[in-house]
Image (cartoon, rainbow, N blue to C red; front, side):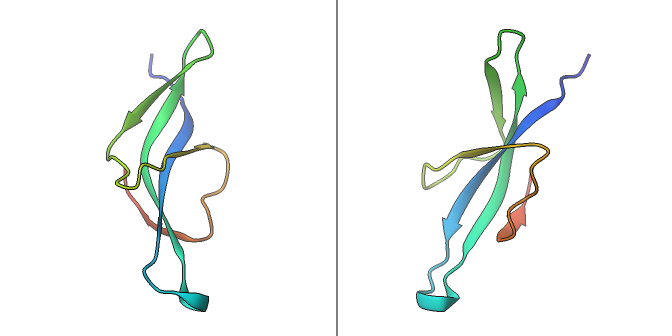
Length: 71
């Protein structure tokens, strides 16, 4: 039986522009599954180069500032 995706893993990169043109780019890099004991298993398709990993509920809408999506 396949497990249902519990959360989606994202990384956020800041744009190099400063001021009003500054943006965040959200990139989907993996997903997590809920284990029977309540813990989570995270499967990553990429590693965040800035070390920032954000887990959001699968049902939560993707951020409005999403730049690209993979995984």
